[in-house]
Amino acid sequence: MNSSSTSSGLVRSLGLKEATALNMIDMVGIGPFIVLPIVIQSMHGPHAIIAWLAGALLALVDGCIWAELGAAMPQAGGSFIFLRESYGKSSWGLLMSFLFIWQTVFQAPLVIASGAIGFSQYASYLIPVSPIMQKVISGSVVILIFLLLYRNIKDIGKISLFMWIAVVGTMLWLIISGGLHFNPDLAFGGMSEGPSFMSSIFFVGLGHAMLKTVYSYLGYYNVCHLGGEISKPEIVIPKSIILSIFGITMLYCAMHLSIVGVIPWQVAKESTFIVSTFIERLHGPLAAQIATGLILFIAFASLFSVTLGYSRIPYAAAKEGAFFRMFATVHPKEHFPHVSLMVLCGIAFVFSLLFRMSEIISAIVAMRALVQFIGGAIGLILLRKRNTIAFPWKMPLYPLPIIMAILIWLGLFLSTGYYALMGIAFILIGIIVYLFMARKKSSFPFSGLTE
Image (tube, rainbow, N blue to C red; front, side, top):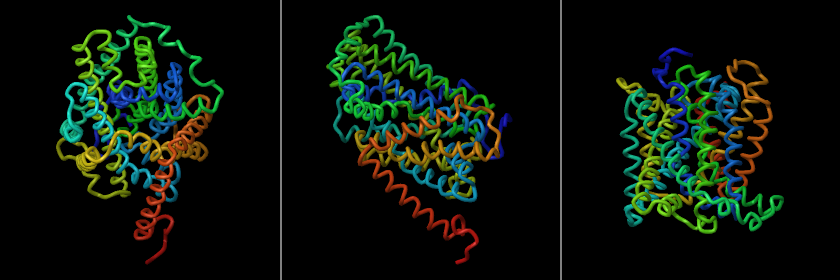
């Protein structure tokens, strides 16, 4: 487990610093800068900070699940491996892991495309462009990400540390700037204007706001997808997940308070470029342009990290014979799954030209909640009961974090409304596709049958 390479041909060269950096830059994309006004709108007041804390709670309890599974099974592919082993690699695990890959082939490019689209939209603060030019920019971002990732993992680890410094530095600048001009009357005034904390309106608003904050936290598990390239994974994977969640939570909450302590929430909720407007009010137009450029760099860095992690998932499935064989190909010199990277970026490029940001966030949550998150949580319980593998790291207060994660994910899934139905339909189509393939291969549930 602690060797520098694995039988898959991947090299274990990412330590705690690189793993934590990759997680954090994955989490801080364009999301928080775009959704902050929407969160305030949904919560109807300054207590929108509750939605950021609730999103952090979900990330923490769900992160405990990922930390335990990742430390026990540190291989490329993350959920593909976890679901297969949890539900039985000769039975239901085949179906569950296939459904995850089935969703990943479509939702991973959606995630990548959402970041590229958000990048192009926020870039219009600097240079107003037509909708067609925004599509050109988003497509170009995907291509550049592909070119940067087409290299050895050691070089990527160095790039990730540089990006992490830029991400944290930018966030600290925003937080310190707001802190120096913080007005508590603006940040906390008007609490009575929002709905009662026990009213149904409050919880409906919290559900809608959490969809946006959870989207901004997603990525705390990215290190699990790179399990085959993590040094000392039984230690590094849990630590990097917990550290990244706590670090990002502090940055998000501090940023939120800094902004609403300078700009009244009634104004902030209507802003399209909230952070740029915030910096412009404090330091002028030039500083706002610089801040916008840094935000765009953060968005780009996040896309870099998330694409890296997702490219390892089809590769891992192909290595196990559960996906098309070409995805198992590793670059002969640089030792990374270049075919998987190429295909996902190619699909993401097409999606970046076709979709709008407003169509993506709820669809992503609805598509992933049942199989990847709820399925993974239940799978850990099954693994614990079977007691067939060792768990180098175990969550505190088991099984309370699992129960909390399942309930919150289920609530978020239902709150997506129409997209929840789409998510169920997509799963049903995946089951049909799996049964067709399984019948041809005489695998579960057709094991032993002949044509």
